[in-house]
Image 1: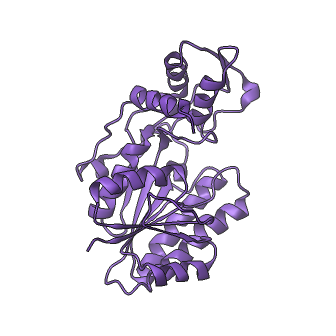
Image 2: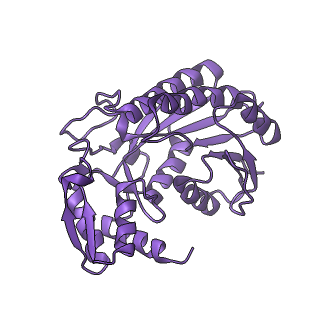
Length: 301
């Protein structure tokens, strides 16, 4: 019989791609979706309505489907208020770990989907030993989530792996993220123009399909208490990303203006050598990812 695998944040962007990956690679596993709103979703074997800030809902899910593996993708994101970020990302992670420790399984492994936002701004390519703590409210909350997850894992006997994802791209990317917004503009443009803010920042873009493959590999081979960058290792200017999307969409004009916001951190790029040592490397080049994004977004919903 296969393992029982939980995926929190089951209605989100990352979860959809993770489920697809697990169906291909873990066909005997029972996939359990957990999110605030219950849903009849054929991609999952079962679905539980679980508010990640409510200990009782976690306990009910554990009673119904005690997990062997948990991919913790749920959480609050920018621009949520700082108190909500901390309550949802930090306090709720401890509630989750305490709950799954009662599953009765000899070993439960938890992968926490963290973020490159935990790193302090630096012009250097960062490995997992680089100075962290976050440069904004979201980054600080993800740093706090990592710390509470590692400490609580030791306290309750749950194996914890931290995956620090850099800038995700790929089919279905939400519009709250830069590439998702630009992709939507490409398809909705009536004046054949994309309007953006400052494009001079440099980012490490990683396709979500590569990221979820890294998550699966880390769940299988990552060491308890280990922290791993999920990155391409290549710094690419936001200008290149936007201009590539504009070209793929038929040669749209890119108009840059400060009125559309600032660029945030100047540079963010990750060293993924720890992950590479386990046999992982990115498979999706930037252009391929962006083309797939445009094609997915153009399909009727």
